[in-house]
Image 1 (cartoon, rainbow, N blue to C red):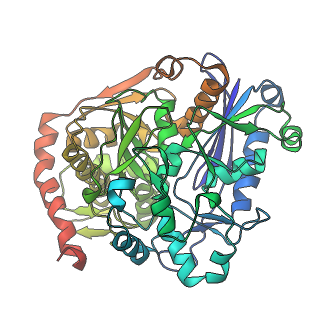
Image 2: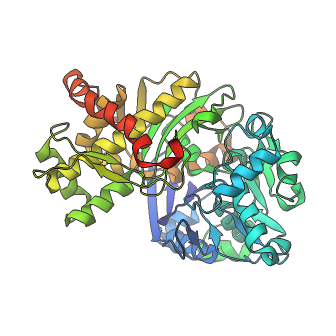
Length: 482
């Protein structure tokens, strides 16, 4: 059996798979985010560790005793700064923190070749600009930084004592030469850092260390190998079999992602496409990333007094897709693809006297779908042709939302059984590959299909005018586009 652990933003999930790929145990533990100032988003690394222990211990002890390997997945980009004693120097700065926009722009000016090396824009959500912010605003902290780790790799340090990371997660730091799959001395030097302060790099299927005796005893399992694992999106892709060139998925989580596996490194940084290493050797991937997706559902449910997401979907279905004039721009935490704008904020447009809670709900579902369409357009500009998307994440529970997304993107959506398990499933599969070997295409076969949604031509036509208005709306709410 193999244990996969996903260090998410809202919680930690632990999943155990047997050798046949069946989920035989699960545990979860909640996390909270601290927002001490506008644009800030932080977490205490100690909270990750406590939540990890709680999630693992929630699994049946008999199942834990049979675990033969552990894999890790986690939220990307978080800057976890450790002193010489491996103790965090400050709260970790998370992926959805927007404070370091100026530092990212300064880094690109200092290294004109940055986009060619990293394959990406130095966005404020990425790790490197965060370190420049710390250097400028907390120099006493910066001077004591001995190691910079990503969230899941801090948990690895607590598990094994090893300072290690995988290539898919590390590609999101802006310190990696993504095509060459190694640290870039030039990009590190731009932040006054060296490779000595970075973790050792591994492919996602390689073993980075062994569970320490103390942790093994705490978790009630043997001292098993720990695989490098992957960033949350890459691990989620492994979990649903997106492991060959052209395979693609749509993740409907707190944030939203369109993920496409590629045999070559293909970048489109000018349109804020993310181009990273995959968690499997010899593969890369492209992503369009949207900072608010299912989080918009929770937000409008609170705003309108709905009991939760299920009631919100019911209200939207009563209104019907494309029936009202309302537009929603889902930029509650800024946006990445295609705008790279951490400061833009969400908006309702074209409200009238007949606007009610049902039509607001419908507009939110449509607005997130239209944002995905913007992101898919940026991927296609980079030479990626997507006609079929596997759907994972909590938002996959709504077939009604799927109809809207399929029409907005004009692609087929394939819903997979167990897709809501997410990155923890992929982390467990990476552990299986690390321990037992095998062909990733076989070990990481897609789960059975539960349903398929094809674009409804009538709905495509009905949404077209609103989608065109959405594409134009960004320029009307932000001075940055002027």
